[in-house]
Length: 307
Ligand code: CP
Ligand code: NVA
Image 1 (cartoon, rainbow, N blue to C red):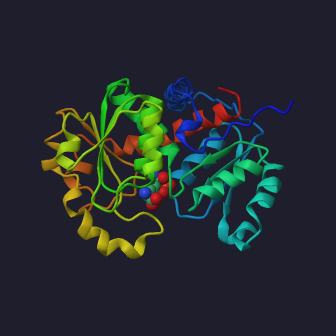
Image 2 (image 1 turned 45 degrees about the horizontal axis):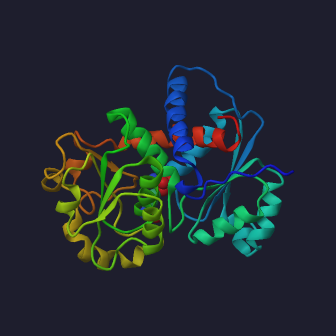
Image 3 (image 1 turned 30 degrees about the horizontal axis):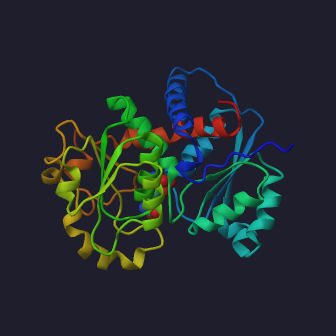
């Protein structure tokens, strides 16, 4: 019988135990890398990286991660592939997956990644769609664990847009067992289906009426840009709607004294976060960015059956 292919399209594709193992393995791999200990667990394997959107962290972390694991990564920009010229997703999936061992995709429509996975003969990783960004949460939880220990039972506050990052924090509350408080402006709420599914799986999620309410008792405060990739023309209108949703010192003063601040980056200082918060003592954004590398190496090992 053909073995089942493991994909990572949302955090709900892994069990809580698997997700925690990936995080712990990320911490181990980070130590190995820092100690100069070779760990070529994916020697001879290839990862195709399909990008329909810009990226700094995701590209550098996956490409470097494959190199450190002894494998190879191919950067495929939509503008230079036949996929970008209209070759059907299912045809591209069959062909690309016949030559590589894993595929990573960053695109707009989440359904494209689902379709690619359906026709792929190898694991597919969602490296950001308009709906979710699950790789980021692996790195973020790893960062919380490094700084504060287990995240289960802690409280996370999401402030800002009901976007792909918000949805992945929602899914993460199922997988990692934290309580999630969400504050979004009118008209920018999270997706009802994502919320309903997470709640049906036991997630503790509170929709709050203000940022101040959401950060009460929070161990971690997190936010993201007000206009995501593909929404650039909405920037001005969003600035007005999100004005009182800035994470600044005044807002952080309502959270727990030892609350951490996270942001997936890139950040817009003076918009969704003030400089004194993102560059201040509670911010762990640089660890969070670096941990993309370590957490995703663990994820790739898991999908390849090495972990
Ligand atoms: N956080 C994140 O995914 O960053 P990039 O867009 O730079 O990959
Ligand atoms: N919400 C942002 C995240 C970038 C990593 C975007 O989709 O542009």
